[in-house]
Length: 192
Image (cartoon, rainbow, N blue to C red; front, side):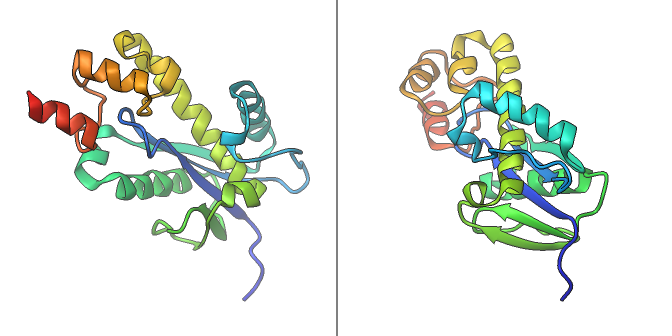
């Protein structure tokens, strides 16, 4: 089998939150323009992520960001919605990759070869790059959602089930961007 020429890194952001879409990014890095210090987005500060996101967009061969909606998450389940977001991101790339390296233990169905890497965002810079783009895009979306629904403080917790978010969810009830299939939200809805 010939070596892959264009390897695309793929990662998601937002599987665990109780609100908002799940995002995915696909990146093909340019070997002629290496970006030093790429690592899992969770190991970087918000400022560092923003800096790297800009570098990735300026220096990669191709990149794309996509998402699956809250409605798709509730209809399909979070795993299938994540796979859908990943597939959309890869399909949006301006080039077709020879192989996609996915963070995690499962691969979406793609038109190219795929490989899954557990903790791939810590092992492979191309997956780290995707991790950073997915995280910065989702965080930006949740800041916009904070403007629409300020009572939930989405700008602080980004929809994750922090004690603050759970208390606000209990106080105000779910918004239209809360995931109704997730247990804490479902419990509140069932309680009336």
